[in-house]
Image (cartoon, rainbow, N blue to C red; front, side, top):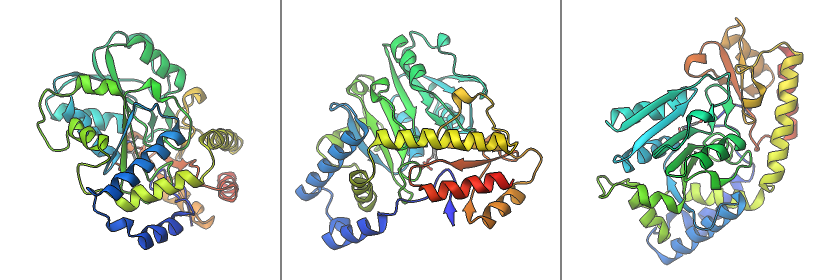
Length: 346
Ligand SMILES: *Cc1c(COP(=O)(O)O)cnc(C)c1O
């Protein structure tokens, strides 16, 4: 079965070998306050920064998940005003849990058929929260919009949920102060680890005093000495580290993602399948949401299973009316061919 669920999804083929290496070397039971761990974590951070072209003064820290990153951000800046812009279920959930913490939250929902209107995001102070790639409806925010937001808001921190796009597409980290992701989407890893990347500007916005263990200030203090606040997911860090050494450079992955996106969209059009967001300019290159157009999900799912394919259920308000497909880099050309023949058979 080829997994096209938009996370957890297909895993890179090298993972079994990396697990073997980690087991043999003893790395999976290494003490996380040891010099050996510091060295390993430093190599991981260097590899990660180099692969993604992340500025040297940005810190890379490990979390358990992207949803944990929502919580860490919401709790670490409770003295600040938050501005949440979202058009779907993931962005809304991040905002909802921020409201529950009694933080000062400004809610701005926008239409999933239109690009985010940057003219209303000017001279904000506090934390601007964005969902880079809205996995529930298959839309994304492109670099030119992100640059405008960055330029027009010099006094704000920009935090972005890049969970279903990091590893599948290129973007400029200079546009954000906080970017986070989980490993089981475009990074093609076994599920269960999150990563948060932070700019030096973050420190000026943190709460004055630490109020909880997973405070971002605490997380950064540990990362700076190449440690984690908690006993880390050592196999998760190791397989990601090795994957980034072995896979194609991000520029090449980016080109292939775009090309496959174009092919998948034109296949849908030829097969009379409609895309959830009819505005192609904002369609996500990595998560494709297709309307069921009156069919039942199980019917489409069964056709997919006949093609040895696992597809994703709809999510949020599109739960009953759509299905979702991952266009992630761990998929090979054969997988995409199979996906296309499935789409053509609908
Ligand atoms: C998958 C996803 C999450 C949640 O990831 P977890 O690893 O389950 O925490 C958050 N945000 C977006 C945009 C996602 O696609």
